[in-house]
Image (cartoon, rainbow, N blue to C red; front, side):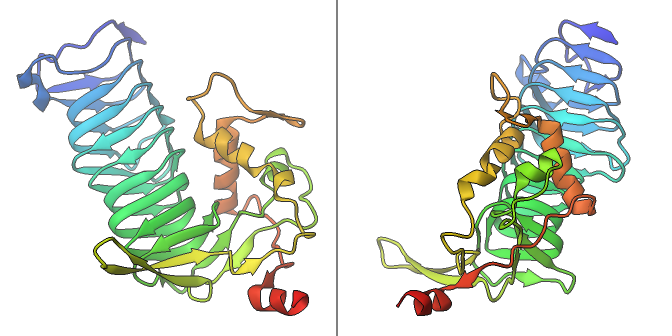
Length: 319
């Protein structure tokens, strides 16, 4: 691999292949703001990247600093090798990573006008006007100003005016939000992982008896909330939540699940001076990433929690 101490913007496009860049790739004068950067494989950048457009045609590729592009960030669908962004990624236009055979890992937040991801792991959150994800794992949230589409993905939570869900969708947090009613395609299977024994699944152990994923109904588990601002303007927000399925106090001790360690190990990787360690062993970001993708593929199947009780039944028992 050819080591570059610095990168000069002498042409309209910088092409990187087989390079170890030991500096930031940043413009130094105004005329260099319009340069494109193309990564064509086997590249490591130990710094940040600023470009008009960033194109990744092949991996492996790793960048340790923040990445920003004026126009678009595009990862070619047939890109092979691990593609790793260790810090936040931002763009004023479009971020497209519709990967077919590989995977891209983002260890920070992603912000853009439009985000389209397939086969991607995001430890942070997505923020854009429009978001479309498929076969992805997003440990944070997806926050869209207009539309959000989620197909066969694990996601922490979401908040958007319009939401479309399809395939197997897993929420790692108790609630998610929309303005309009959530649209669901016929193949939707919506699950909540709040009460799943993620630590047992991570270490290949037997899940706790009274743990498991909860099946959710995008209509039946939705509660409308009226919000009023200081000027008296009202807006209806719909909360999709498992709060309507209250667990009895003696069913499950949530702290014993240690899910927060699993989620933090995946979400904070690269931002901590040391790794999390439980009694069974060390928690590694890549293993957390693989755990959730194995859930999507069906290789790992969490059992279903059935010991739940609704609010009405709870009132009857203790009134």
